Amino acid sequence: MKAMIIYASWFGHNRTIAHLLADTLRSRGMHVACAAAGSINPGELTGYDLLVLGTYTHHGRASHALRDLCAQIPQRQLQKLEIALYGTQTELFARRHPGGVDDLELCLANRGCDLVVPPLRLRLAGTTGFQPRQVLEPDECAQIEAFAAELWEASVLAPLI
View 1 (cartoon, rainbow, N blue to C red):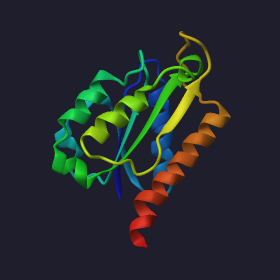
View 2 (view 1 turned 90 degrees about the vertical axis):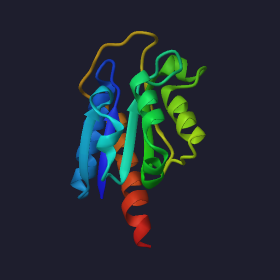
View 3 (view 1 turned 135 degrees about the vertical axis):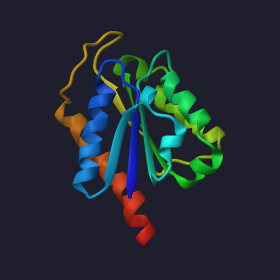
View 4 (view 1 turned 45 degrees about the vertical axis):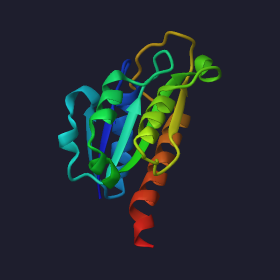
């Protein structure tokens, strides 16, 4: 099983999450590549079984680079991939506004894609501004590890049944 994690990170949160997710999946035996959204094109997704997209939220929308990537992946290639999403949003706005994950989920749904597991939504403390941090809180790590376990079970174990 080969997975590609593509993330858009404004302050470093999603990059940190992507690398923890990749490490957790690798520890289970999955081959995982990790790349920033602006550094990859749809042709580079050939040969992967699982695509995980991670985005920040800005004014209720996902990263432009990830939205563009989702729109550019050929339909037949999308149909061959298991797809999952994760995203971050500040706690204050998460209560009142949709997030980047919702934006990507809609983009993929409009292209006929279902997610292999429900999206991981991480709410960041703070209001409008927060500082980059490279260290995740213990509860965030636990959520990411649980998400990785769900991905593993849905992508690797389920086809064996």
